Amino acid sequence: QVQVVESGGGLVQPGGSLRLSCAASGRISGIYPMAWYRQAPGKQRELVAAIPSGGRPNYADSVRGRFTISRDGARNTVYLQMNSLKPEDTAVYYCKLTILTRMVSDYWGQGTQVTVSS
Image (cartoon, rainbow, N blue to C red; front, side, top):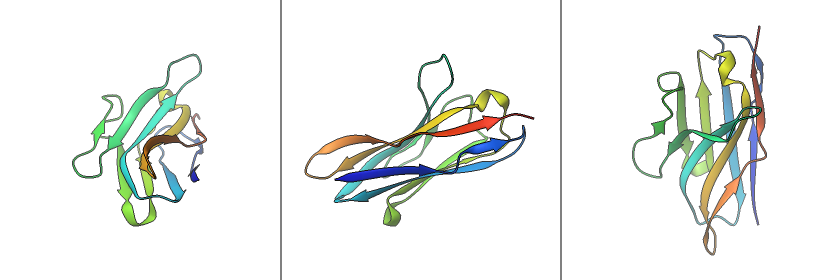
């Protein structure tokens, strides 16, 4: 069994910063792409940032230059550093990990709320 657990959301003022973490545990042979998505009320879930197991990360235009995705292979963890937060960044953030156990499958975190408000 694989477990994926997120942490780090919360309430922050505009211009502030937060760091999200997403850690996988269990019988893991490897992790391929790691990604962060978000879903605001009344909107579809959208890709925020993704990072392959080797190669450059990519970002949604709305967060490029403000958010940074990184991964720690030894800890099976992906991070999202969010700076210069705006009210429109308010959403539930989800990580998605493509994990090899006996087969390759996508695993989602439980979601963490990020609220940007004064």
